[in-house]
Image (cartoon, rainbow, N blue to C red; front, side, top):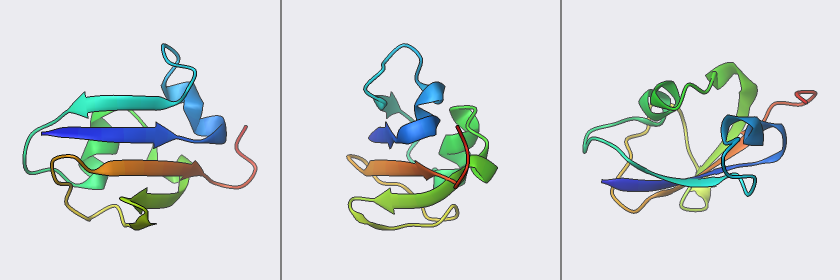
Length: 78
């Protein structure tokens, strides 16, 4: 399945090849937000807010094909 991930503010450092902070990733069908972060080598401690398709989400929520995930940094992370 394909998931679009949008990194905001300081989290864009996880997408150095794409300064827009937007990437599409092909991932296994059964995957949680936290497992996706692990695959992308993103430390969840730096993620304060998570939106999935425009609604609040948690690390243990399962992703679906075509989901749009938006990740916002914790306060003070630069």
